[in-house]
Length: 195
Image (cartoon, rainbow, N blue to C red; front, side, top):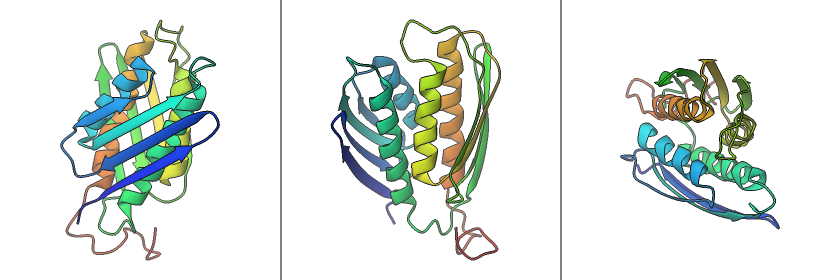
């Protein structure tokens, strides 16, 4: 069964279209109008082995927030839709990922109980205009709309680019683990019988 989905969202502020294939090889076509965000989404696809297409336009002349948040919403909806009834998935995933001096942890439960814990230190903003707070807004929108509990922690890091990149890579790797199918799991991985 092909686990893929396409979702679109149009508001007065943004237009976003996302297609995701969970069992991909990491190919990506990303265009958000925000170069650093494009880079983060590309490496998210590559390190999670998701085939990902993101086309987004928004009022980035105002700021990046609307576009980044709406991409998180649509990506979350796409992954949620691709997971279907969540039968046979491992449900839990985790990863610890370095990027030079930065070290990020990500832990995921695809529980349909959305929650974000984002324990990432504030760091002086990089020249990209894409800071830690913007990353938090993306992951909040992504977690809520995907139906996942997502814990992110950065132990240390000095360069904001490295910190954010280590987070995106860790979340991608954890999500790859959580969405993986396991032949031992015949239904949803829950004693309740549903997720």
